[in-house]
Image 1: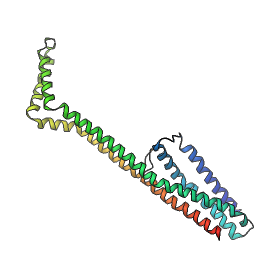
Image 2 (image 1 turned 30 degrees about the vertical axis):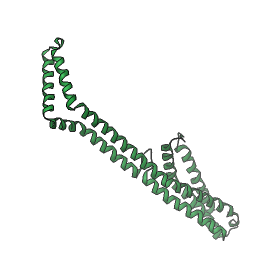
Image 3 (image 1 turned 45 degrees about the vertical axis):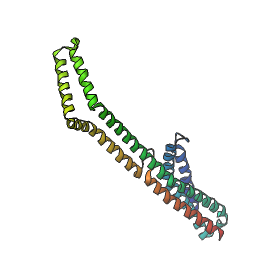
Image 4 (image 1 turned 135 degrees about the horizontal axis):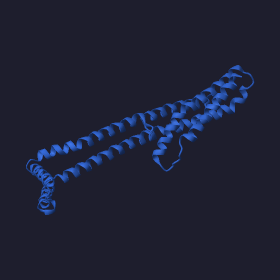
Length: 239
């Protein structure tokens, strides 16, 4: 009776694992590498539940063998199935281990590369916009606007003259302009730093899109556990 209860519980845990996997990886996108990364992370998270089911089944087989209640002779096939199941998933988790590490690191590198390119493009635009030639061109445009009789209102003239004086000062002393550019770029650099730090943290602990190094290590432990149970099951069956 005890062995039957253990086997029933183990079977329920194993079936529940497959049900969780079927619905946990929706929607299916087999051509998307990031989907595979998220899907394998779900497999790893569900792997412990299935492992507990296998352990309960193995324990039930052991109880039947020790009790010698006449059911031990019929457990040979179930031992073979459980051993094959364990070895198969041991190989699956062994494959997931480097795959999770690779996809997580690749995802982090893409994010860091993207933020670096964005900041570099912004810096290039700012330097181009504030170069000596650009400033002189802007001053010339202001002079032309001031000469236009349509733009002779006092607030407009004062605004243009103030802007012209500031630009002329920047032409004479570029250090002031450099400080202003650095002030404008400071928030972008802080944002890039925060995004890069988050990407590095996600590399280790995982995110919605990737499992991370933590998932990779968990997969390695599951691979060892499943492989050990499968190997020992086949070994004891051969005796």
